Image (cartoon, rainbow, N blue to C red; front, side):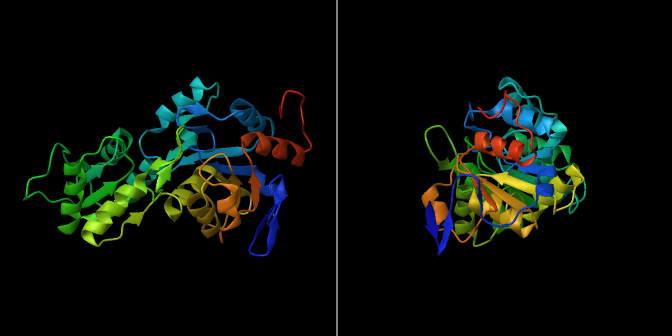
Length: 298
């Protein structure tokens, strides 16, 4: 049992606020820290997706990670024994490019601080992506600077992004995650790069991924469901859970990623449900629907 702000939280199948069974008709599911940690799948991953299929629960996998594209994530899941159509996978890179495509004409120039998934998403949405080889020339300008997580950025690229923002480019972040879960522990995330550029420019970025509303709205469109019957499953209080509540969705926190019991106990962001991992969530979904086959819930 954990006590927080005068409330007692039971971390095993606990109901922190009312949540209707209909909320399990549609799930928006985070990936890093929920389905895997780094390149290590979470225990019970195939059973979880089998339960969603058995219970006819619709889902969209929505990640703040902008490094890859949907097909790459589908291939990663396939290697773990799970088949998911790319159309059911939504990255913050895709959500960001879609958001900006509606606000800029075709051929607008973008400087991208990020990996191949973000660059590809911007190019598919008709942006001219500037070269990131070394520091940009002093007379180069961009319509927008888009910043996501990257494992390969150097000082010249970060400095170029700041230079272009200082010279009028719109400053956009795929997501604000300060860290991301890895096998060795939390490592710096996209939010760390955003903080560097914000400090250097005095400009705050527009955030597209969780807890921003754009990625939730896109996920709801893909699901074709109502807010009342949709829940967000994630591991991060300040993005997954806070964003779900702002979007009018129920929330399910898993403690398999970056949020510890101690952090939850001191948080003002309170999820509807809390489970240790997807194995515990799987058992809950099956029991709520009165369906517990022998080969599930191990």
